[in-house]
Image (cartoon, rainbow, N blue to C red; front, side, top):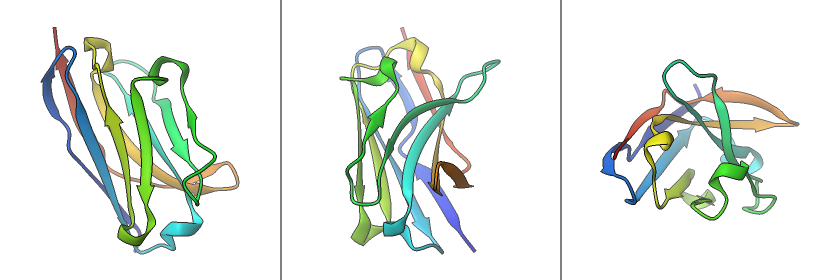
Length: 117
C-alpha cells in the first residue's frame, strides 16, 4: 500500500518560512517524479513544483520561483519543500504527489499552511 504523508505545515507570519516534508512508503521512491501542489479555499488545485527521480529536472510554478525550493532524499524516501518569504496568498493545503510519465499516480492527504498578514 502506497502512502504519502506530509508534515511541517502550520501558521506563520508574512515573510516567514516553513519547510514541508513528504514521507513515502510502499513504492520504489527513487523511480518516481515527486511534486508539490496546493489548494486554497474556493480555488482549484495548482502546481507548485516537481523534481525528477534523480533530483534534477526541477520545475517551479512562476509564482514560486526564487521563494520555494524542492528537494528529495531518495535514501530516506522523502521530498521537501522549503518555502521562504511566505505571503498570505500562499495560504493553502499543500499536498505531495508521486508519478511517472506525466501522470500523478499517488497523493498525500495534505498539510495546512496559513500565512497571517
